[in-house]
Length: 164
Length: 164
DNA sequence: ACCTGAACACCGTTCAAGT
DNA sequence: ACCTGAACACCGTTCAAGT
Image (cartoon, rainbow over all chains, first blue to last red; front, side):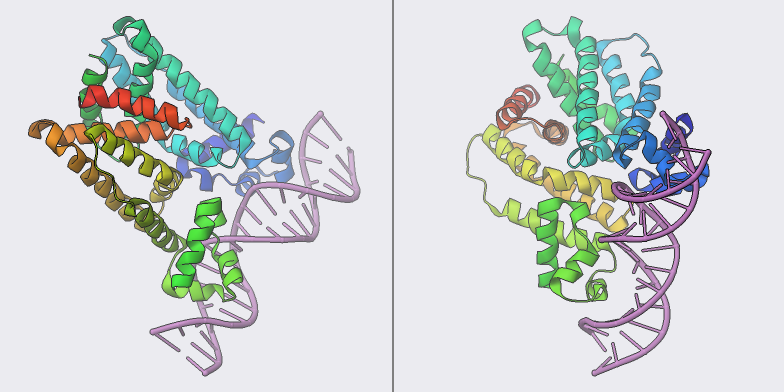
């Protein structure tokens, strides 16, 4: 089972969802396809397990303490590493219930992280909306193909007006 | 050719990219698959042509004149209609050059529209950054599955701080 | 120029069967 | 419980051939 998920993670990290093939993965592991279908009833179940692992590793690096903006920029960089999979997750969530449920969890997690970073710097009654707006800002910036410098500039620009 | 694109648009609007099958489309039109490959060298070329038509129709409805916020909210609602295809476009752009080039055009178009809406209400030296930030706000809000009311509330909240 | 026919190498999923 | 073997109904793309 760990072998399967590891293989899936490799393929996913390398070539995205379309490189994550149950048939090809089984071929490489030297097992029948149904060996995979025993643990994961659907390709999307396997997808979720793989993404879960990848995301866990991305978020494992502890944020260094800094200003509120620093924490948001750190958050945005982690989100950026996750961006390709985040788009695929969104795409698959439309069709697949497992992915949709998983996506809801991930979004909730991101929200909690942002609320935590903003808690001490924003009035309580504006905290939720501000977190949502900053998260939207980050996701909206990241969906575009920009350089790291451009990303940081835009997020800083938006942050100053939304929070500062 | 028009028949092909119309069929593609129907399938795309209904079931997304995975419902857009060259084989199935040819079957329904009663032609050989190569009849489609004559006009579109790749499935993604057909995808681009179909999305182009859909987006054109979405943007055809003229924006009613109103406050700056009204224009942004109108923009966001059009973008919301386009949201599913926008995600698919982003996903495909990673693999397909045609889609990547088309995406760049679409993003540039959106940017021009927003700059136009903000021109009279924002200082010239902040116009570009503000447009980028508002666009990010909109895209980031739309990527989440919210009600129309929630969407409008969040965009209004962000708009007031980024522009107002 | 425009299209047909037929094949290729893949897919995800499923059914029946083994141990 | 865990896995194999073999099939099913699809794909996108390509090659050769027709008109």
